Length: 375
Image (cartoon, rainbow, N blue to C red):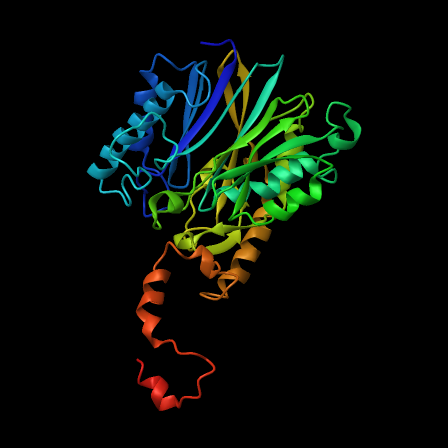
């Protein structure tokens, strides 16, 4: 037990209503019921974005606490039973194992956790996305913590002027690297500009205090097949030497293009929406992001404030719809459809295997009839 508070956000898709668009109220009620009976939590908030259930929990057991992860796992299992009873789509799809092994990481659910000492005032934002992947946070986290055109505090706040540390994960090689900004800025951008391969896991102040953390789980890499997009979460602490709330929200005023959308196989704009509008329907999208703000008070979650319900994001939503229409016009052609290396967990490998014996050396001088004979 510690005096520090731990903020854990653990999410999973255990059944969509209807299709992949939303979560049935009975599942949210079941999650509330399970967490309410817990003795290990300081506080909790059950919410959702799209078809994902998000458990926002505070406790004093530290990150990767087995008891907390077990609680989340049991919650998702109980919700899965409700989803199966209701015959909801994809019931239990994010639960890749039948048995809990001490930590939900690698078992399907997405996890973002941070442990810290509460400041005199502790505002935090929980960002939750649907129909996209962990690398979707690369652009906004860069804007928040590294771009003075977005975050003026980097220029005029003495507590921020020295910059931040960025911890970046290589999702393919299961490695990580630390960058010190602003001096490593260009090296950082080389990697995080490829969000399907590298993603920002954590951001720290130069005093090594945690400032932001994201979920980095990729379902297809864990399952070896396409089982749904990762629908990541991200926690950002604000104010007092960290980005102001408005600086943390500002990147989403310009909807950037992310991977995901329909069948996790397309690029589309990340649209900032209110909780009420977090039901992706158009081509199962476009991808959505919700921002819930809380004031922490001795571990209690005061809130939430639904930040993207603000009409000042109306133009961002309009632009996202315009981008969505433009990209949809490309249908199965890249760059709307993801490149082939990102399609390895769809039906693409089966198609390639089927055509394997029909390929011939392009340098061979064979007739059309001979080539047709390979069919």
